[in-house]
Image (tube, rainbow, N blue to C red; front, side):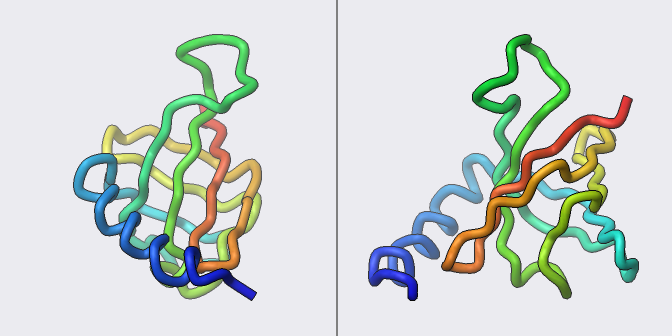
Length: 105
């Protein structure tokens, strides 16, 4: 069960962070039905990636912006027209997921 912090403040943080760190991506679920143009908070790299620039990034998305929950293997295209595949999904109790992305080269 989500805490009051998660229920009350996470949505507020989301709306504060999106204008500063947000981007728009086209999201293609494996199950079809896409693309969905959604807002995301983007961060280059992954904490344990040894080189920079690397091939990994991660984004935070609101699950409600998709018709189904994100899964490994989904694809997205960034504003810069780079294609990424979802490598891992870390879901939260408040409807936001962190997606670890691997650039398709």
